[in-house]
Amino acid sequence: MKKSRIIFEIERKVSTERKIDYSTWIMGVTDTPKIRKDQHGSDGKDVRHWKDWSIDSEKDGRDIEEYFLDKGMNGDTGVRGSASYVYVF
Image 1 (cartoon, rainbow, N blue to C red):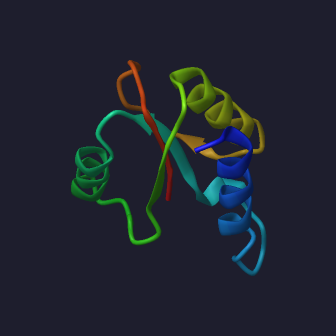
Image 2 (cartoon, rainbow, N blue to C red):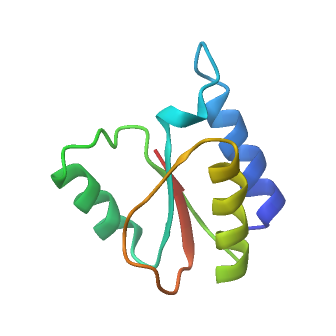
């Protein structure tokens, strides 16, 4: 999916809250979204609002991640590596 479309969808997801607060969201990139979601859930994080998108390139994923980290989202503390998905919850 195109980078601009993913950014639009994440912005829309965040704006559904009463008060827009990026700091309540976690953003990350991964090659294995199901495994990563399960890991976050096992760590006690609430993943009910999980959403992931397939990205065109790892660079696009890192760009999206940086865009939202700059807005105040929390970054995933996982291992850095290749990525074909970006996720938020």
